[in-house]
Length: 140
Picture 1: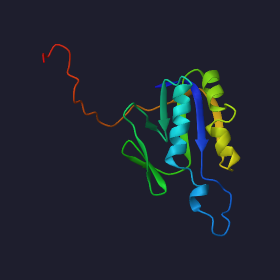
Picture 2: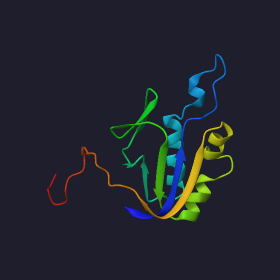
Picture 3: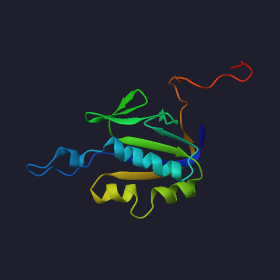
């Protein structure tokens, strides 16, 4: 899918750890990426990808050590979240005062937001398991 939208890039903080400080304080976590994705869905995104992995209704984001598992693909930062939709609306949602991007910036995580007129979100390449759906006209 191609079209206008925006790309949000988030990465681990460059802030040096203080003695005895928990390293998790300077790492981007799956929950941060999920929060960015959710804000963009809420902002009207028609399609979203994280590091070129298409997000669909059954996609899960989970923690695997210092990396993130998206669908069945392991990813490491920086995370680039591309959303296709109305650019102004997506930008307003992403840049909302007190929102996830403000929170990340407040804790010294590098965040960039870029708009574009011809962004690409690749097709979903995984499989589906249907438990209840059947093709129309097959009975049952």
